[in-house]
Image 1: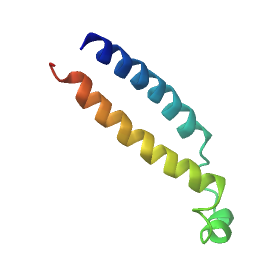
Image 2: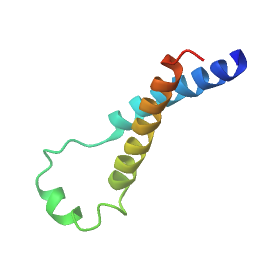
Image 3: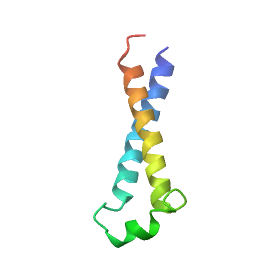
Image 4: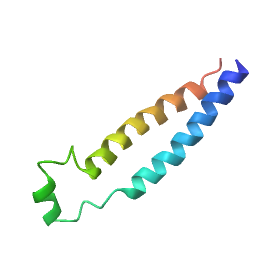
Length: 72
């Protein structure tokens, strides 16, 4: 079980670093004109991909945090 905890901890640390980088790569919401033009294709743009990646990594962060805090 200790090996599993070490592996999950390494994944958790990598997820934390990746989540921080992805959040910092995102543009601010104060762009104005960009929102009207890119609003329709947001899912296909790089910004849309970053939002999806942030969501997935945040869910992974919370799940791993809960698992690592359990006493198993």
